[in-house]
Length: 90
Length: 90
Image (cartoon, rainbow over all chains, first blue to last red; front, side, top):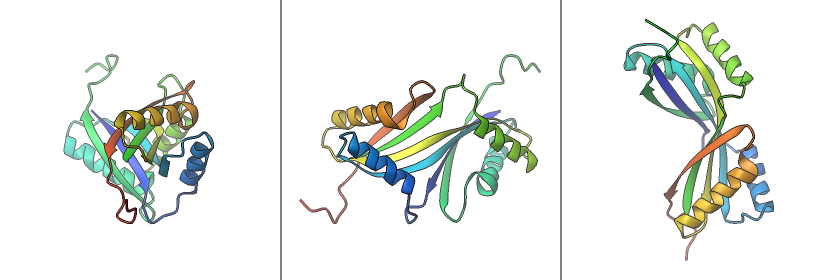
């Protein structure tokens, strides 16, 4: 079993109005030194397979088919082994 | 100048309906091995100060005051030095 941490970000050429709004909010709070705010998604999930290669294939496909918009977004992810929870025996 | 990469996640005790919807979508696409989907935010921003300690203070305050909801969410971040862009002279 593996835990995947996925980051989905807007491509740099795509305008990010949400990031602009947050930047404006931070400036209003007095944080004038903050700039280039970009907002993306962080997704964590577990993959119940034994092989890391298989987990990687599943996560990559999930990102391409559902979790990101390949026209506007890029994704990256890390995988780490996860022990089965104690209540899942065998 | 520093670049901050911030991750804001829902606390594990808080239900995540968006994550449940994504999990359901992945199962519908055939990825039955995926579980425990949780959705958070990924925020990137630049902080135009010289000291790393000062950048850390600003990002921490920004997270506490605007970027996260301290009742429901946790945040973590990394800071890395960033060269000034070439068009910003002096």
